[in-house]
Image (cartoon, rainbow, N blue to C red; front, side):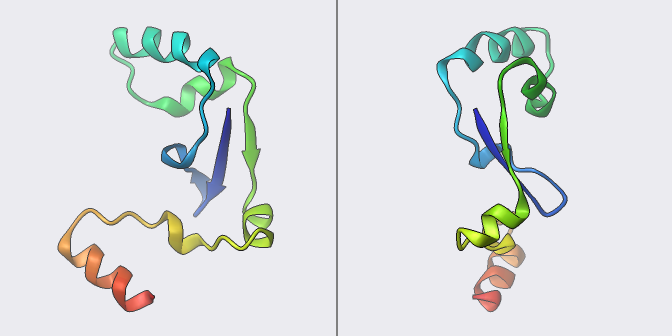
Length: 79
């Protein structure tokens, strides 16, 4: 799997997951453990660093959460 690191942490919603991740994910969810980051140590994981992301043309703004109308307004103002 591949996951970017930005804004001081991993960004699992932007990750690319392979079939081998399914079994550890199911096991974790059945155990009531919903934090996905803990599973990255169980499978081969490539972390894309902030410098690599910037060099590819991706800025931190793409990782900001937009969950509320205020977040949406802030995101529009930044663009």
